Image (cartoon, rainbow, N blue to C red; front, side, top):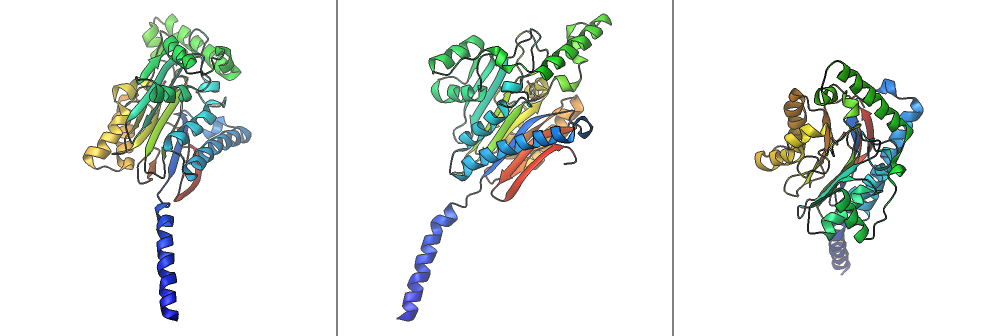
Length: 343
Ligand code: ASP
């Protein structure tokens, strides 16, 4: 009798442990705040600490969403909005200036379960472009909206329209003046606009924020948001809002958010190429990311990096620049925040 009761209790306990195991599905989030000429010598200890704290805040906030059972889409948007609201990163509040001394913002988001996606390009009056990209995905029949039309859609959806000046920051304005001086100097040496632009250092061409995440249901998502390139003109749009170039997510392979010299990321279809290698060649995300960033992009002069997650919770963050602001956390890895190559 006593033994039977014990067996019943054991059976009951093992039954009770089934839901506990089911909730042990892996969760993971990786974020980036842009890649580029990021060297320790350019940081005071206070500045470095401030950047690390903001990255930590964003990754923890995204992780908390996942931990509560929230979707990877919500985790990605939560983390990206924190980085957009910070003046440190080239997106939202910290966006760089265009040639005409304004700010034009690009963003995109993709859901790996359904391959639904939304993107906005060249918006000037949207505080959090990642929110608008998500609205495009969820409330429109389109994937990408641009400029005034995107803002009219935002208004129709009840999203507030803000003054472009809210994205003004002194350090970005100074960077614009420096970029203009350098291009003027190049023109005086008989370089045309294209050649002068080419002579600008990488620092003027990069900076973006992004996130990729895996939720408890096994769905992955990716999102990216940027102010683009300092001194950009003629309505230049980079890779960040281009699905397949700057952002891609498919449960069959991986989720990727990119940062770097956008023109290369578009031409080499970077995010989708990484996921194709995973899906069709059976590469790990680490192998596929390294191959594209180091073996494909670097030899042709494409600077930048990516963050990647797959449905098993593997995470990878390859880059071919001096540094990349980045942070990660998963159910099997404690929070990690890094900036420099040797971090
Ligand atoms: N990829 C962005 C662009 O070209 C910039 C960056 O990520 O650094 O607009």
